[in-house]
Amino acid sequence: MIKDTGGPAFPSPRWEGWGSPQEGMTLRDYFAAEAMQSLLLDGNYDFSDRNLIAQKAYAFADAMLEARGK
Image 1: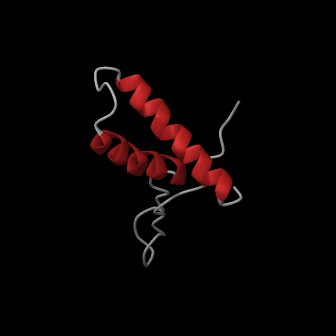
Image 2: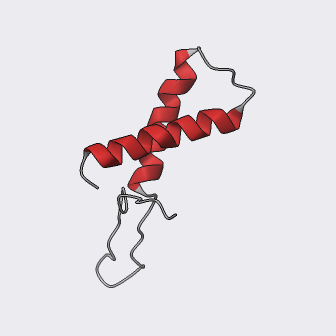
């Protein structure tokens, strides 16, 4: 199953005929990174299980995308 990424978070258009457009990270990745910061500051998680932290961060990101109608 392919997850909805929400599209690019910080797209950069081509400027004045030079360079190429860049999509940057996806909105889902941006939301997950922000959620992970909060999870790491929480202190209630076993940081030795990095996969668990990452999974929880993406679960929050998916919930945020769903809440915004994506």
